[in-house]
Amino acid sequence: MTTKAAYIVSPYRSAVAKAFRGGFRAKRPDDLCADIIRGVLERTPQFDPSEIEDVILGCAMPEAEQGMNIARFTVLLAGLPEAVSGVTVNRFCSSGLQTIAMAADRIMAGQADCIMAGGTESMSLIPMMGHKVVGSRTMNDLHPAAYLGMGMTAENVSIDYKVSRADQDLFALESHQKAVKAIESGLFKQEIIPVKATSRLPKADGKVDVKEFVVDTDEGPRADTTIEALAKLRPAFLQAGGSVTAGNSSQMSDGAAMCLVCSEDFVKRHKLQPMARFAGFSVAGVPPQIMGIGPIAAIPKACKLAGISAEKIERIELNEAFAAQALAVVRNLKLDPSKINPTGGAIALGHPLGATGAKLTATLLHGMRRDKQKWGLVSMCIGTGMGAAGIFELI
Image 1 (tube, rainbow, N blue to C red):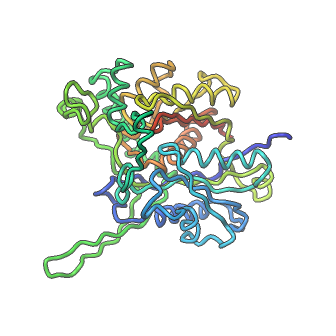
Image 2: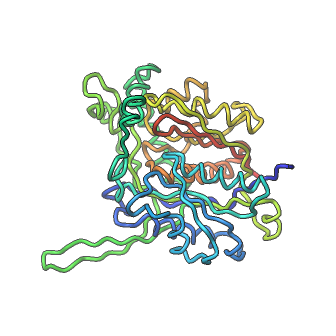
Image 3: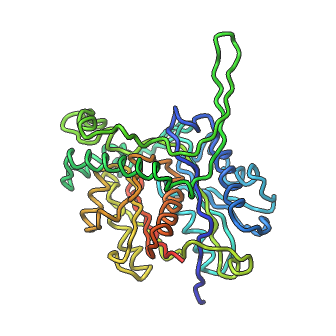
């Protein structure tokens, strides 16, 4: 069977808000994602939305407000026809990229013509690891590192790969500087869909102060961050000799991102303008206690599947779960630092878990189009010891 091409159409995202105190702190993740779905369709040449054959939605903590197959609820909230189905996918931090890959697989196999894919996450409403961590006595005996806190895995990486505290802080500073510059230059405006939000605060007279506002700018980047301020922060996970701090780790965030994945026939029939061809995807497992090195295993596999060398990749969105692991990946694979996160990464811009892969895809493709680049890569480490990587060819 001949493999067909899968094209990425209309990749957009919300701004990324700070968890607990940001603009989306009271916004349900299904409502947020529904807003993004409507925004994607509004920005795409009109076609009958009933032609969307499935909505694949990534979510890293699919319980409570994110439970009950949040994908199907989001489809209905977005006003899509009832005939449009939805399925929720969880591969932790790579969930949003995984959904795009799954949609592309179906398109390339000739089993579908148009699928919407992406991710959503509210870290304000659902805590890291969820409300009740799933435990197993057998796992505790055989693979206790699978339950190791992410910060501790970053400490392990910093030790094993000899990433100093000074280097981590410098990497974090540069992430903020690049992100602030990108926002000030308006580079994210084309990829962000403004979203309405509401706050309700009690007043002294017993009434509730209701305010409506629009979230259209990433909330995490700090223009006032300095290397001196970062150096003063205490280790957050390993007090004795630790190097991983709140300042050189990704921020907890809320956000959503979606795109259409379409066949060539669908694109031509509806006169759509795809941004990229989906060229390859890979996942790989690594020891859970150093989960941050996952991209070291996944990126070469994805390059091989795409039929290109890593040197040909011109732009890389590497999720900055921690500066320690991001630097370990860059150094081990001998990646060009100038290609990495040119508009900042998760240390500054935030990491809304299940939405991150789709969010990075939107940032990557809009950036590649702006800078006239051909090959791009999205990659991230994944909790419990995995890595993922997706390669895109700009049209």
